[in-house]
Image (cartoon, rainbow, N blue to C red; front, side):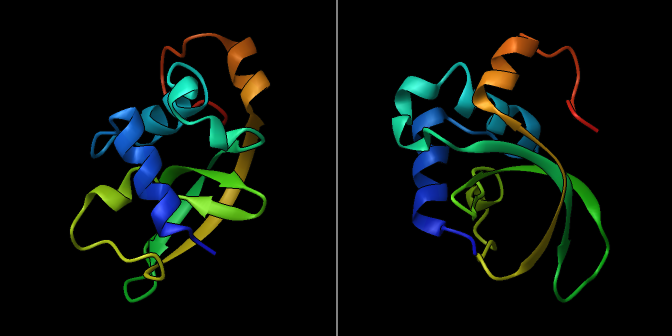
Length: 111
């Protein structure tokens, strides 16, 4: 399940930008965490995403909290609807794991 309201709140509070999903998600759990304390317990996820109507997979990053997907990047687009995509996770990292890695030089981080 994708939580649209929470996705938009994270995007707005952290100043997410289009086309930089890895950075948006990383920042939400590290540099901008004080702006989104409700993400305590959330994990950074890297994987693949596909439109349901056009099944071509591409690399993507998002957040998960209690089994719910938080999508701070795609929610920036007017055409986005929460039920339009398939998500396939390939790697996950907790906030602590991201902090231990330090500032990334390149994304994706885990893949």
